[in-house]
Amino acid sequence: MSSARIAILDYGMGNLRSVEKALEHVGATATITHDVGEVRAADGVILPGVGAFPRAMERIRERGLDELIAERRDAGVPILGICLGLQLLFDSTTELGGAEGLGLLAGPVGALDADGLKVPHIGWSPVRWERESRLTEGIETETPFYFVHSFAPDPTVDELLGTAAYGARFACAAERDNVFGVQFHPEKSSAAGLRLLSNFAGVCASVPA
Amino acid sequence: MILYPAIDIRGGQAVRLLQGDYARETVYDADPVEAAKRWADEGAEFLHVVDLDGAKAGSPQNLDSVRRIATEVGCPFQVGGGLRDAESVAALLDAGASRVVIGTAALRDPEFLDAVVARHGERVVVSVDARGGKVSLSGWTEATEQDVAETVKELGGRGVARFLCTEIDVDGTMEGPAVEELRRIAAGTSAQVIASGGVGTLTDLEALAQLGADAPNIEGAIVGRALYERKFTVADGIAALA
Image 1 (spheres, helix red, strand yellow):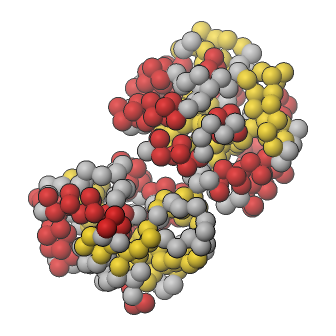
Image 2 (image 1 turned 60 degrees about the vertical axis):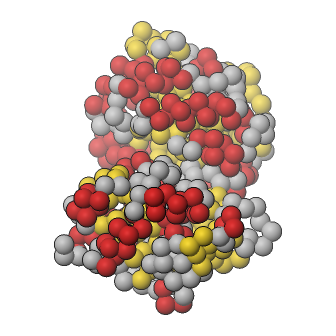
Image 3 (image 1 turned 90 degrees about the vertical axis):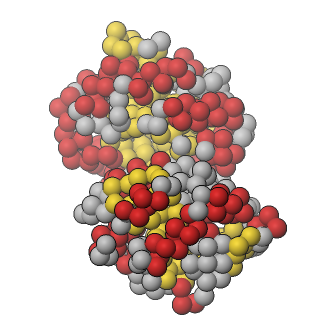
């Protein structure tokens, strides 16, 4: 439906190809890049990521991507963080001694409180939407998404978009203006995940360049 | 890459065969739904279900198990075994399968294949089994002279989005996947390829992950016996494939 051009930020961590494939599947044009010009030319930015928060932030800063992301946010360009990418959008983490995040969403990231269940939490869990959003349009509440994580964010009530339960209930989606983040992997979550990415591409296409 | 735990159903139980031989069967779970739940709880992203009775009979024989996996497990799955007509395909998809896996009939009956691909698109997976690079049919009882990579290339050109490629001689042996053969198959097609057969250790999965770095259309690997014999957990397997 959308021909949005989406930049998948490459900061050297995680498998970005599955995200790229999923975006292409929903009709978006995806580019894996850390080139300033290419990111500036994009209608939307995806911050993916697998691994440890402090190392990821180091790499992002080394490449100057922190400033680029803030610049794009200020320009109104939609941004979607996935998994570690969502966590990086928050203020800080306690992971591995702690680190500062990008601060595009308010709140800290902390270890998942799984009430004795095994961590990392890997597998399908139903996600409850806590509010309406352009990102989740057409996706029923309590639809399962696929997770792989040991940490989770603690957003403000205003920015909380979705929760899931694993031992205890945790925040797994957040939103502020055109900044979105999901703790689960939409690119691994079948039809619902593709719908979410398609919705994001739709938001990107609707924002005037 | 995606780790696909395999659940082979025979006589209502979860079993594993050695090299496809019905006489060399090990029963692992009295109820295949329990196996599906276990793999989902360990973090499986997608399950691979084979109706061995269906493969023998030529039509689905374990629809109840399929329905129960769909309603009780909460993890998407594909099902194969004996699919030879459009009604059976529709019945499995209606029962809750995300995808169907078509084997011999895809090669023998091009009209059937075209019809189900036209109707169900990416929900159709074609399973191509081979021994020494040559395609085998009918539960591996019938050898052909068809080259497996050529076959995959041709069917991919007809719209098949995903293949399941099994190397018979290593299946059920846990002696390692046929990496070079998979590389050759993947190089000839832009469709997705799921590797099947021979995975016994995390090192085998790491070898497939490495192959996947060169051949990005290798999408995942089926793991059977190694999980049932607890050589490693689903979570460890996913990490090794990442």
